[in-house]
Image (tube, rainbow, N blue to C red; front, side, top):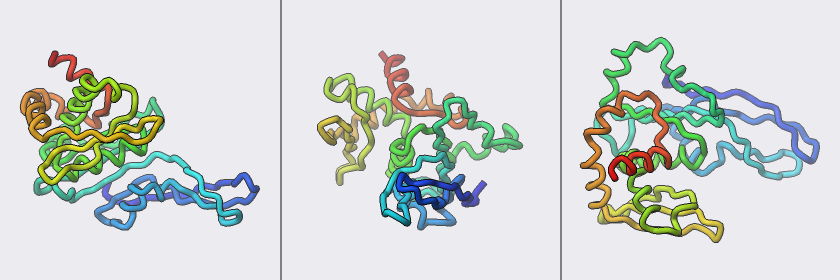
Length: 221
């Protein structure tokens, strides 16, 4: 791992024109920082027809790697696999690695599996903000429980205020709706779950999303 890899895929526009798109299998932003903004802004998955100029999203799976994570402890890294295949086994990414090798890097490396572009981008922002995505998903579950209007929409981390407070945005049919949660609430949840996370640390390529947050909150009662 640690190498940016792409392949060319053929596309045919509705106007009939044929062209190719670079589909990235692996994006290493440590070695290729210019790809990071393209990924976050969605340009990496957007194709513009050279004939008619129409732009369209072209979803494809990829492995995101940041081997020198800003905002993290020394040696911290983030690896997130975006897959649209429900049967995909992300442990294949660790083929040839012994348990000892895997555990030796657990202190600083975060490996996650996500199912959408939004989730991938959110994982990047969470890690770079110095937060734990597991605690944040539980915090989201608390927000959904306490604010009925937040139960249905997708709820995403949206940065931090100057005082450390956590911003979230709900993607409602009427448009984005924001909510801000005091940092103390996140810290309270994180403090309660540190012991549980010790066990979860041994799960390779964990899928930490809404279901995870609600299951953990359910166990906390």
